[in-house]
Length: 325
Image (cartoon, rainbow, N blue to C red; front, side, top):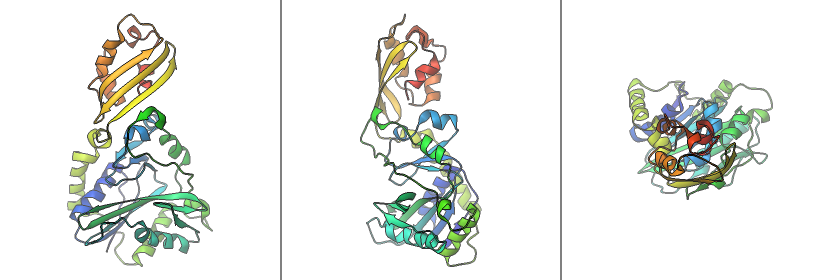
């Protein structure tokens, strides 16, 4: 097995690295890595339904879709991610216990009383510190998971608190659970870099060379995959299942109720209702939204030169955009 601990913290690069290595490696891999602040959504999820759009935008949090299923998770530099890639598998069944066992063993060796619970979680005193996901592709398996070590809990809860009641779709919804940081349960203080080394040493059995990073040819292939896929809106948002969104807001101009039909991340149709006043027919505003990405910047571009107050009195563009997310 090859052991990798590389320094890259760009979420798009790291998610692309997993896919590229899964499809191109000629040996089993165990890898530890970290991302700067990001929400990572599952392959089958509606991205818009999993995030608080305003919080993510205001705090400059990256949003990336991964290639495995399961629910959305928050990453920052206080979260350590682990990946196993195994070749030659004959099984067509997901097996979370086998890949999480060495992680649990590593933590127990550090004095942490932890266990596997539910479908794919690792917990301490019933609190989740790790979510896991898996993908089987031909005879290859990718298993990856999070290890909340010293993550910023305010960002975790803020970024993942979208209201699912306003979304109408059949996408997989994240199951919110109470979480904890591993660092709070260690018998003695430890920084995240020491924790990474301890996990790597345990899983590798002290095998030499695990500090080696990615080779130049691997980095080149991964960066191309970022360009073509993981760095694109089409993958991270446009690949969401079709959904409808409906919400009502009290605004300075009155109650505004918005209904959007979204297909492949683009607004297919929009309807706007309410007790507001305007000097132009709101149907014109609805028509401007049709065809836009359900993305703030794209809609802003479509509204350039348009006075939203002409359609909804006392409602400026920023307040109108808030009604759409």
